[in-house]
Structure formats: C-alpha cells, structure tokens
Image (cartoon, rainbow, N blue to C red):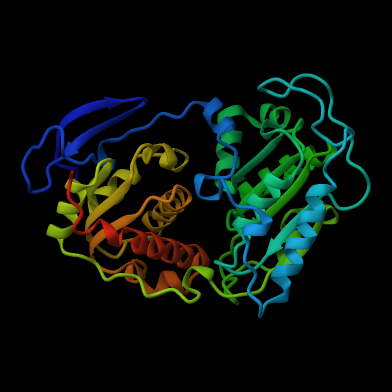
Length: 382
C-alpha cells in the first residue's frame, strides 16, 4: 500500500510533497504528506539534538506543579534541585573541554557517593518534566549535558560506535536518559556497559524507565528491578519514587471525538504547515523509516491530520506508532484525526501485555495532542 502523492518538493534534507486528499491538486496550498518524507539524519545531528525536546524547553523545577495529595512529588523536586546544585564546581566531571568525539583533557574521576538518580513512577506523573528540569538546573554549558531517550542513546551508539560514544559523552557533566527500555535485554546490557564507562569518567546519571514484558503491576518498572537490570551500577543510583495519577487527565476535559474525513481534510488545507495522511498508509511508511528519524520526519510540521484511523494490526506497528507519538508530543504538534478514537488504537491483548505502559503512554499523549487540535476545525486561510 502506498500514498497517493502529487508534485514532490525538496525541503532541506527531507523530501516532501502535496497529498491527493479529495480536494484536487492545489499546488501551493495543499498540505504536505509525512509519507513522502524520507529524512536522512547525520551523526552530528544526533549528538547536537541530545537536549530536552521543544515541549520541555522552558520547564523548570518551579514550573512543576506537585499534586498536593502526593508528597513524594514535592520531595522529588527538592532532592533533584539539590542533586543539580551538587554537580557544579570546577572539579565536576566534564569540566575539561573536548572535541566533537570527546578527545582532549581526561574527565575527573567521580567523587564518592551516588552519582545517579532514578525516577520511579507511573506514566503521566511528570517524570520527563523533572528530568528536563534537572538538565536545565545543572550548572554546565549545554554542550556538557546530554538528554535523550534510551532509543536515541542506542541510535547514537549505532551511528558512532561504542568507543566513540564513550569518548563523546565522557566529557559531559550529566547524562539524562528518559524511558530506559528495559524490555530489550541486549540493548539493556549495551547501555549498562556504556553507563559503567561513563561513571568511571565521572559523568552523573539520571534516568526513568519503561516496563519489562510480563511486569504488569502498576504499568511501570519497579526500582528494584531497574537497579538489577543495570547490573553493577546500582550503587551509583538513588531511587526517587514519584506517586500520582496521569496529569494529562487530571481535571481536564475528555478528548474530542474523532472528526469526519471531510473536516480533517478541510482543516489540513486551511492550516499552513499541516500534513495530511491516510492512517494505514502512514503506518506502512513508518516501517520504512528508522525510528531514530521520526523526529526529522516531523520537521516543520505544524499539525498532523490523519484520516481513517484504525486499530493497529500488530505489535511491531504499534511500537513504531508509540515512537512517533512520543516525537509529536515532544514537539507539541497537534493531531487531528477521523476514524477510531485514540483509546481504541491498541487491542486488549496489547494493553494487557508486556508493552502496556508504552501503549497507555501513547494513548495519553495522542489524546492530549487531539485536545490541542480541536481549534483547527473551522480554521480558514487568511
């Protein structure tokens, strides 16, 4: 199955095109299509983009609003703020200047005591907000701090190789890893080995994690299991439990119901920078683009419009959709859709399986983006 596309347009390193969406070919006004994009992401961009995503550019500890019924949230803010302050000073790891691949002055050895924190809690309690706030609060130049998801870190290893990744990051003062993927034993061992080398170089660590297959419970991975999975590194981590419910639904209205194909198509044509794709076609296209490029896939897109949203057919497709949902959420790109509501994307078997936390997170984030998109309906070009 392929997308029906009109005149292709070269845009940066991404190939885009207009989409045949039932309104005819409107060369200059038609929305683009994600299906027409095949981004190529160089290794240096992977390094440069290891910063908090746009959604978390302005977050700080004082913008985190703790639930008054969950004292662990307030405690986590205080502990992380103190942890960030403790990473300052001339003798901190990463204080020596290094080149792109980390060559140069050898980093200082880590001081005694925990040099890492692990944020333990369910989805939607603000772990990423706190992790990004820690990155911002750490007294170091942005080039000496790194922030990325586990997938982005493994992609960096794939692009640079293990040794060069160690050299690149060992000059850093802090490495934040969001959504540590504990459901892939091979990648977990790889990253654990990487972190061991970085700890030796004096790099401070902070992490959140995902759920292992079969670890249902509260839909999260318990801290004791996280510390076991990272093997000899457990002594370097202090675990912070963050209790609470998904803030994206805390006191907020229900997500808008799906719109008609016509409404979505009209909104796409009326919104500058919007993309328009048939959902099954987009799922097919995601299989041909490496997940490390999903962020670049959405470069310059102001809104994603999808027609004929259907339940995803299999787990591999579902996991790719989770990554796309994360990148859209990071970039605050609203999603307008027709077809099935987002809470019916994943089968009951998927929602009860080992990847349930990822699927619930995707539903939560897509629901928030659908709520953001409701004002697009009825929009008209000036």
